[in-house]
Image (cartoon, rainbow, N blue to C red; front, top):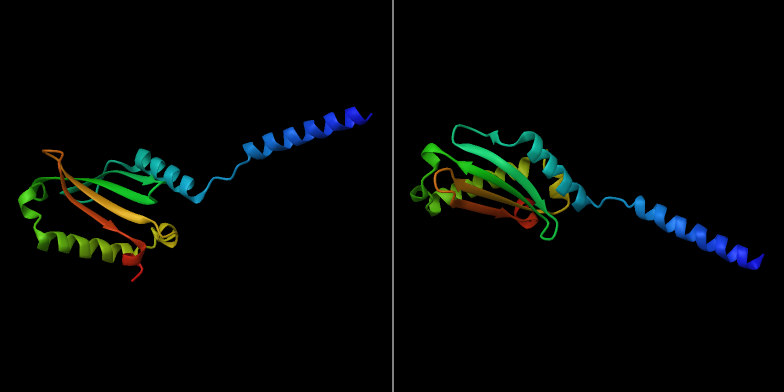
Length: 139
């Protein structure tokens, strides 16, 4: 009887471990990664305006960074226009938008980093890359 009880206890414990493993809760970071994979599949490419297209958005769990990938066209598709003044203007406008975005609040509440990458439609080269940390968008 004692051997039977030990085997039964071991079986119940093993079943509990298997069930608990199957019920593992998705972390917030895993959810963010999944959300942006779905967003890209459903929404991208997405025309922002005549010169900017959002190609994809992805969340990197390791760095806790949300990456937005854009393509620039026509008048914005020239590396010569991205001097410090233009970069500062882009930075200022995106930071202002990020600070006031209600849609991004769940991600901002988690303190993730936002990265915006703009590439040339003609060359594929990165023309502009901007990164914003929680310290920046919470000020």
